[in-house]
Image (cartoon, rainbow, N blue to C red; front, side, top):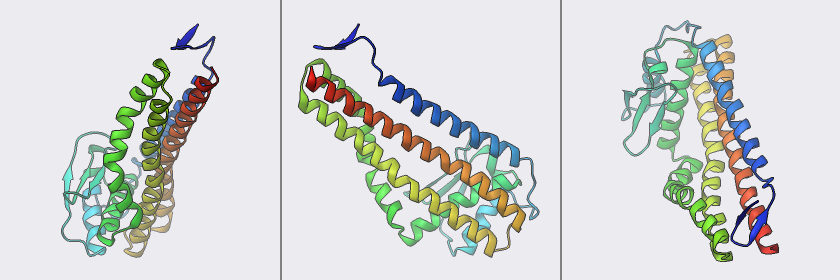
Length: 235
C-alpha cells in the first residue's frame, strides 16, 4: 500500500495521467527531431545559411538592433528579448538547409514580435518569474499538504502549478504567430520558393506540436493534483 498521511490506496491510477503526458511529449519530440533531420539534408536554393537567413529576415523586417550569435547544441535556438540577441544552434547557424533557414526565421519572428510589442509575448515575458516560482515550489508544497493533511497547502500547490500551465498556454499563440510571421517574410522576401515554404511549414508545424504536447502533459499533471486533493478530502 501507498499513502500520504491518512490517505492510503492500493494503486495510484493517476500515474496513468503522467504516463500519458510523457508519451505525448516523447512522440512530439521524436516527430520534430525526425522532421528536422529529414529536411536538414535538403539544401535551400537561396544558398543562405541559418545565420545569413536570420540577418536577411531581420533586414526585411526593418530590425537593426538584434545581434546574431552561435550557441552550442541541437535545436537550442532562441531569441532573448532582454538583450536583443538571437542565438542559433550548431544545427542551424552554419547550415544552408531549408530546415535551418526556417528555424532561424522562426526565431526572427520572435524578434519581430518584440519590436511590435505583440501582446502574448509581453504577457509571457511578464509571467516568467511567476511560472518559474510556481513550477519549483508546486510539488513540494502539494506533497507537504498530503503528508500533513493540510488543505491550504494542497490548494496552494495547485495554484502554483497552475501558473506554470498558464505560461505554457500563453506560449502557444506566441510560437504559432512567430512561425506565421517567419513564413510570410520568407515568402514576400523571395527567400524561399513555394515548394520550400511547404517544407518549412512541416518543420515549423512539427516544432509547434512540441509546445502543444507540453501543455497537454502539464494539464494532465494539474488534473492529477486536483484528483489527489479531492481524494484526500474524502479520506
